Length: 88
Image 1 (tube, rainbow, N blue to C red):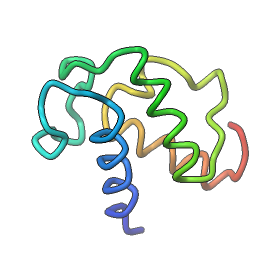
Image 2 (image 1 turned 30 degrees about the horizontal axis):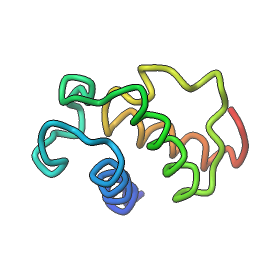
Image 3 (image 1 turned 45 degrees about the vertical axis):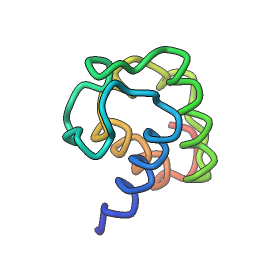
């Protein structure tokens, strides 16, 4: 499966919504986004943008710090929710 479009979309969302301390293109996929300045307010904006971009709904149970920890963790959640086609 080609994950490039998913990662590109997530990086675009982060660059528009996350207000990180460094440009998103300088962050590794597994890097801790909180260490780069991610705030709890930004996670709400990211959640809404991810839900809209991927046409998914992130269930409340998944809305944890771990979900927003890295680009990899966001991509994994998007894939899981998209594959299941509903709340997980």
